[in-house]
Length: 235
Image (tube, rainbow, N blue to C red):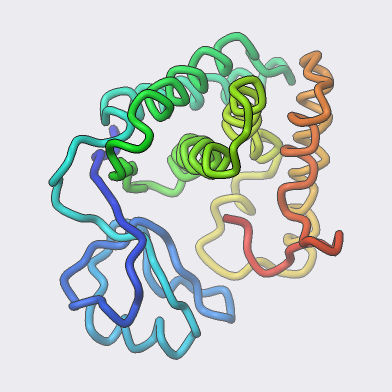
């Protein structure tokens, strides 16, 4: 099923009115789902978000200005990455030329429109299986914007957009019953889930992608600034 494209803003929880649609899945401290992407954020959910200490959340907004990247291109990018990841399961290899083409198309639109249009178009996750592919495209878009704010050169931005597009490729080797579990993982399952970064590094290296910037994005994207593992969540 195709995902519905829509524009989004990062809104403070305090300013929510009880009519917004969430564009991210939020979990309680015990790991249970509080709000799923695509759900309406009701008044009682707002109070629970406040109780959990969440300050901001991505929500759907009405289309008021042209987006940084056209919705059709984002949907196409998601479908392309889905094919790449499925191929990685069979071949244990990333089709790097395809990922490069997709990531640079997204980056090109962002660079062309940067400074003129501030609206992001997100794809709402409609199924658990769609999450990883949708997430890869979103992370590539946001990483490109952050990189531009930091003043990265075009060559650096190109590698950043590419690396972000495949950062979770190791999840293709995580058992589905763990990856898509609708509950808090057991300690044993959590240990298996954490291996997706090592699996990802093996896949990118086997694909001939030995650029340190790409390898680091895949291997290190769950590390804290002090080098410890980010253990509370995986999004």
